[in-house]
Length: 205
Image (cartoon, rainbow, N blue to C red; front, side, top):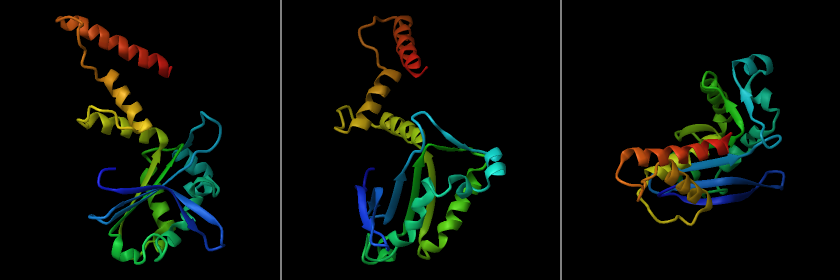
């Protein structure tokens, strides 16, 4: 995240004397934007937990559906936003707060606005007044796709020295290739591009 100070697994002490952590903490000192990002997945390797209109009618709100599992992190927002945890004076240092929850919950677009509203209503008293806020509810898949898309937009040619971004870099190399030495005919170049896309498609089958 360009322009942000970031820290992984930021620890903080809970009111009960135990310890918890924030998976990714990011702060933009000039814009005074604070991002609190928590990432959790549930269940076996290939499980995706869908929350749709059907789910809403059958199980109730996202909190009823969650049963204090993935969204249990919400209970720490008030503590995190209090003075002395991240900053001595939280309101002085933060103008915009972004809370990002990443999981293998697929929230359908038809219910996403209500889910975001329900999440905010759950924590609105925990966020200090006059601070702008944003709620992000992303899947791990969305994050991976976003990294690939953003890497493709950058002009950097060298490796990044970061395993995830470097994998995205190599995916972009073969999905958006600049074919060399295949001959001058467009047909020959297109044939190689098609073969590369086929290899990728087969890997995803």
